[in-house]
Image 1 (tube, helix red, strand yellow):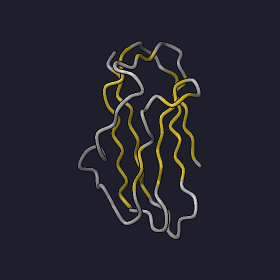
Image 2: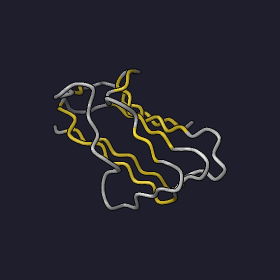
Image 3: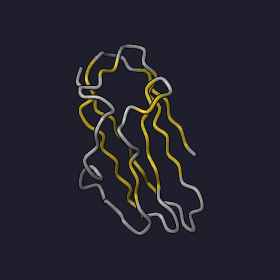
Image 4: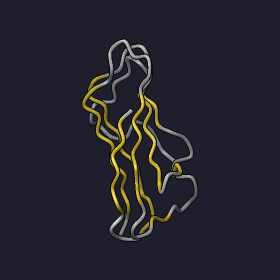
Length: 102
């Protein structure tokens, strides 16, 4: 489990989530979720299935925020949660980007 926390600097709506995973996992999926102040801001976490590699060509699939529009406020704590349990070979070189329009 890997977590990275950022603080929102400008208020605005969430526009997109882009996830890239250059190396496909083997044995179990990589699951990515974005949390705002400890609560998921996505309708559902994003998963990369074993053996499937979306290579830097764009978002893994369309992603919906928990509400439309989902507004982020100055000072909100954004955490991206990356989980993988039981992998034979973990996925690698994962990039997760949350786009907020300021």
